Image 1: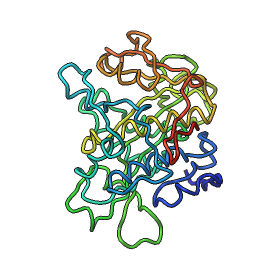
Image 2: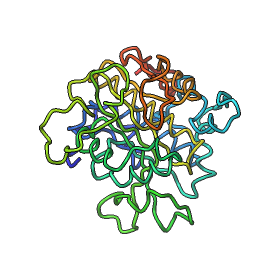
Image 3: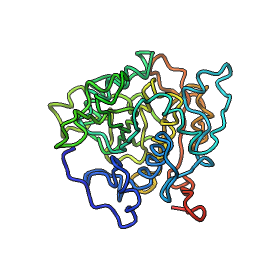
Amino acid sequence: MSDSESEAPAGAAAAASKPGIPLSFSRKCLFQPSAVEAAREAAAAAAAANGEEGSDSAVDDSEDLPDDDVDEAKETSSYGARRGSGGADGKFGRLREVLPFAFHPNVRPLSINDLESCVALENAAFENPGHRCTREKFEYRLSTCPELSMGLFCTIVPDKAQGFEIDTFATAQPAETGRNDGSRSVLIAHIVATKSHKKLVTDEAMDYPRDFRTNKHKHSSLGHQEGGQTICIHSLAVHPKLHGCHLGKLIMKAYLQQLKNADIAEYCSLICQDYLVSFYERFGFVCQGPSKATLGGGGWFDMTLRIEDLPPYHARVAGGVRRV
């Protein structure tokens, strides 16, 4: 999106001191009024990864977030084992082991300009081609309803990368105008979604009209439904080099909080494999049983939550816990 960002609210001053942390989404985005809480959590991740002391604006939501990342669950024999987080350093400390440079995250809505990065991330994140979003589907979703998708980016300076390589670097955009160090804003995690009139995710919701490029105003029963009251999450992807760093939980928590703040739909739904049911339940999703969706050969389970039932976000700040 090319629209300029809206003004940050007055309470965002603490987060503003963290470089690379946005205080608001673009004015076209339905996630309003701001991404301050997402920024605070990203700042906490950056502080922990960079070995900094906690600040007043740092978020410790270990009581709210799941204790396992998706891929940590996959690595266990039962797909149900859990690993304690142990505070901010425990949650994000692995980033220091993985990244040879300071972690400067940036949470923002995706746009059509992120198309190639989304494709590269999806291909890296999902081994099964049948479970990946295709390039054409990304093009449709990022051109039709980009405001419903979110990306987690990290600034990488080539001279400081120390040999660290990631698939999405080649497709990344310059981090900031006016910088001559070649730094890029690299996509490391994303959530991509559309709206539907149905409460559960269906094959029609996951599909798209093949003539979307030429018939932009023609109504179709496939894909995004502008007046729908269900947000259908089609992809939650974290680059495999950063698995186990709790970034999947960070972006999901930020996304759900923005949905609640935006008041743009009644439900949020997705489909997942059986071993991930308990993972999503910890965000508030309720399993509705086996899904009728046939993507990738089927075998999915329907998960849904009522957005207004999401619990208040608890930010641990200096002097206690604050509900936001």
